[in-house]
Length: 412
Image (cartoon, rainbow, N blue to C red):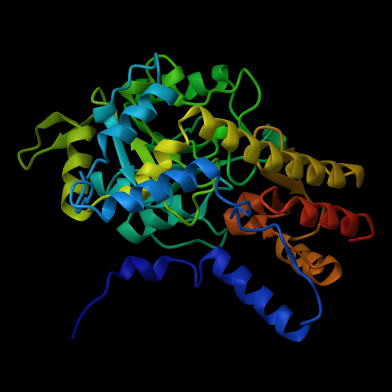
């Protein structure tokens, strides 16, 4: 008989977005005439920038020639892309191209990076939170069983609610790993430089590691909100940063991202005799990727390189502007109804605090049936997300305008 990893049995019965798809499918089958406007999952809707398409065509043509053909590429990514990333996004922040690891998605990187740490490592996550942070650690064996309150016994939860302006307090119990996502998914909240410095200082003091998910940094509009954690002094000693081309450049289908692992980031490793030594995470991640990953396709990396060109940056900025206009319309529509909203300023996500006593899955069903709009229940992001709801600005402009019109006549 074969035995499975029993940690998987501690996971909820279905992934959040799988449950949403199931409910939407059932409603559509029963109401085929109803046009649905999908503002739930954070998938983009605009075509790829023309500079990206041109770069891909050139790369495809190269693959058809003897001189231009490429097979396996470097596990870390091609130098042309890593150099472009450093020049465009990390000038003056101390990073170099060897610290960049290109991949096929930030979701994979965030889920896989925990493999470098021992199973008794304690993790802390904000609540509500992107489900992959908790689920990947539960799969590894760090989560333990889920309690009646919906929280895993082995995870430190940092509530983010309207009471604390969706900004987490420093944990009372020391964690080994701290997951921070800013601009935040799902709440759309941000940390100013002063607020982020508190976390960097805390991690340095406690010898913790910060997993900083900045997949939405391209949407930052306010000057006091950092795009990278490495803008904070000392962050290179304690933080790994995850970036993505999915939302800012429309690569959800192409799949390309990267993680920055500073050579100055060291963690303790304990040997069998009880002695400990400092080990660099950079070398460990390189070893992991070399073993388990064969690299992002050459054609896709050329496409990513194009987003760092002057033309590409201009086109991506136009995409972002359009999505943020959508988010602003959604934010205003719910604010007019007297509800408290977060996000929609430095983030494409709008987080809505529902009327007291309204649970998020009930609101999901009501919005689906009453207005034909698909959103995301806050409870799916963690216990502190109950009573809240997420909508995104990633829809088409015309659909978002129609959704706002429908919301005007929607009562709950």
